Amino acid sequence: MGLKEFVKGELIEIIEFSDDSRDTLAYRFPDEDREIKRGAQLIVRESQAAQFVYLGQFGDLFQPGKHRLTTDNLPVLATLKGWKYGFESPFKADVYFVTTRLFAGNKWGTSNPVMMRDEHFGVVRLRAFGTYDFRVTNVARFLKEVAGTDGHLRVDEFAEVMRSRIVSVFSDALAASRVAALDVAGRYKELGDALLPLINPALQARYGVELSAFVVENVSVPAEVEQAIDKRAGMAAVGNLNDFVKYQMAQGFATGGSGAAALGAEMAVGLAMAQQMLQQPGTGGVGAGVPETLSPAEAAALLRVSEADVIASLEAGDLKGRKIGSQWRVTRAQLAQFLQ
Image (cartoon, rainbow, N blue to C red; front, side):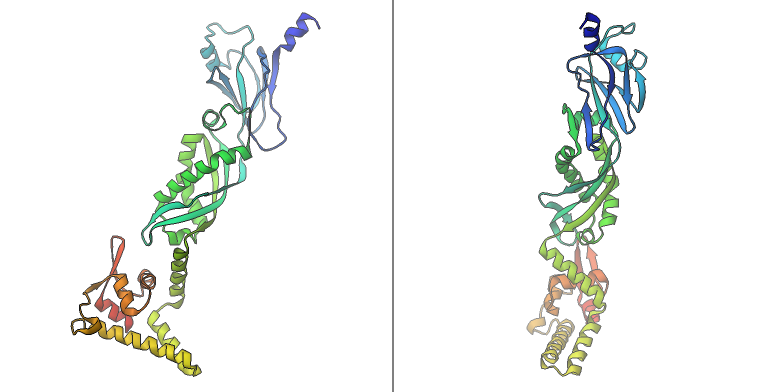
């Protein structure tokens, strides 16, 4: 090998990256300690961007196309290297190719329950998982905060790195959205659409990526919250609780079943006792000392139902009451009207 061929072999004349795997996010061009020749060709394919890095500082960014590397199209690098009158000699710089196309169907999920404050249940624990689609929008920030000096960053590595970060942003966005736990568990699509504009600004500012879709596939809540959701759904299906009780009693008497009749009679006696206690609060006995304004727990004790049933009736509007802050209050008169 002659000197000319040796020198030519030490210079990089074409810089390009062709990827058939479809899973590469960032790739550092392997220079093998060689220098880039003045006038070398840089080929950037569609859905790629090429970022020059010189001594740890970000230089020029190239979009898709064929570029001849001269001082004119390397203004940032020329400034970093101090080329006052252009460059004639080869130079060294790292070149990173970043894929900017959309990557779809990436999974996310909470490894630990997310704590959120709910107006109905106080502090509740939620677990959630789903998918998201993303693309790189800020190449320099993505390389700095996510890829680092990794010579070949793939999507699966990115998903592993970003899973906890996306969950963290999701948790913050969910808390900021103030969506009730009852709604979280039944309105996944609306929740994903509502959280997307809250999640994106944080991801773009921190990591240089943007989500085009954020899908919530499932949200699981504690067992007690699930029971409250079921009861609320049951109350909505029943409609007027008083009419439902009368219907149950009539069904029991019509079928002649002793168990059903006894249950209907027991419910009727319970309702009658509750009405009597409400109408005669100061006559002594069980109803003595019943306050004018009742909490859901006190109303539930009078009706011999659970507190969740009373709250569900208040939420549905069947039982009239007033919400003060996050607490419900109902008067004896409103409770008596509900039982009539």
